[in-house]
Every structure is written in C-alpha cells, then in structure tokens.
Image 1: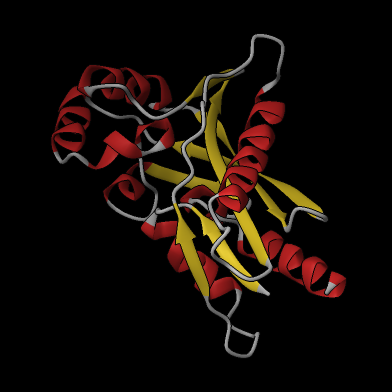
Image 2: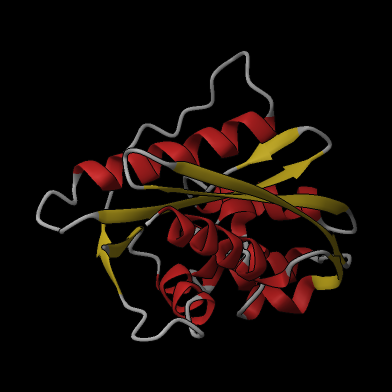
Length: 195
C-alpha cells in the first residue's frame, strides 16, 4: 500500500504531510493529473468541485501504475460568490476583476477531497465562509503585480499576501489553503480500514 497525492501543489503537499503525521512512517508520492476543468452546464458548484476532486484522484490512479497498491488522493478548491464560480484567473485583468468582486464581500470556499484505490472510493466536501475587507484599486494592482493570485482559485492565497484581505473566516482554514486537514484525516482512516 502506498499513498499518492494527485497534485503538484506545494500547499497540498505540505498539508497532506500534516494530515498523516500520526501514522507511523507516513509518506506519499506525487503525480500530476491533467484533467479538463470546464464546468458542465447542468452542475452546481458543489457537484463541480466534487467531480473535479474525484477525476483528479482517478487520473492520479491511472498515473500510478508504477506504485504497488496505490491509494490516490485528489482535491480541488473553488471560490463561489453569489452562485458564481471564481476559478483560477486567466490573466491579470481577470485576477483584478475577481478581486474587485470579492472586495467587501463574504464568499464561500469549497474544497472537495477524494481518495481511491480503484476498488474503494471515499470523499468529503468542506465549506468555509471567508469575508474580505474593502480593497482599493491600489491594493488590487499591487497584489496582482506580486504574481501571487495567478494560480489560485478566486485570485488569492490566504496563506500568503492574500491573507491581508481576509477580515474573517468561518470554517476550515486549511481547506481554504487547499486541503481540509480534519476531513483528509478521516479519509485516510477510512481507507486504512479497508486494507
């Protein structure tokens, strides 16, 4: 049995290591799944993020043929404001648009996690409310100029400079970073019971 993280995100890598701290000799390998992340016209934000996490885990399993009894974890995080999904910005103007929308508002961060070994699959969805302070045009320009928003859902990273904009949070901080620790530990325990 070997754990595999279907992501190359340094944030998810660090969080998975934290989630497995209590398991003796916990370690995992990384694979980089490449899936189509286009939302389907009929799915809700919740269905979308759960589907992507599962597809990443399944794609990761397909990339893990070199691993003995792989157990693959996939995760996806989205930002939702008034029903609108804010994914990763396509360019700087898109990042500025998203940040202007989030300014002074409360949005929801959904992070889904799926764990599969090809025979058993477990999943969890974590929802967190995040409130932003008011952002000036100068704040937005400086933040986008830092480059940080460009690979992050909703165009911000709570664990770095983007945390300066977060007025309050209700829910899981680690889920907003990219991997909910409590829910991930639950999934690891569920999978261990199957072996």
